Length: 81
Image 1 (cartoon, one colour):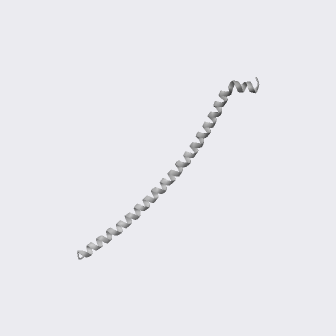
Image 2: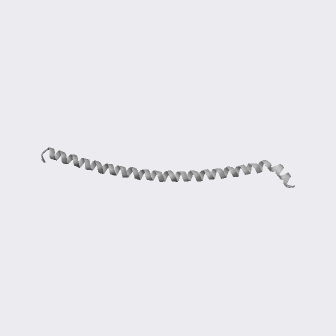
Image 3: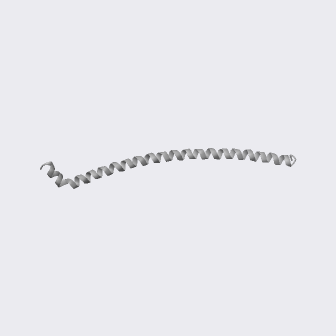
């Protein structure tokens, strides 16, 4: 049995095997791409959470100052009593 007979008899199996290998390589590439994207999104999420926390803290500090100023003004308006 020479190579042409083998190819003629098993061409469908050979093509199927090559197609499966190509498909597996494409799936693996997609998995790697998705893993990188997930990692990027998690890092972005962490940064967003840190930014939101910092913003809430700044807002809280500002509101505390405003609250103290209002208390001082009310105390002065009522004559310090």
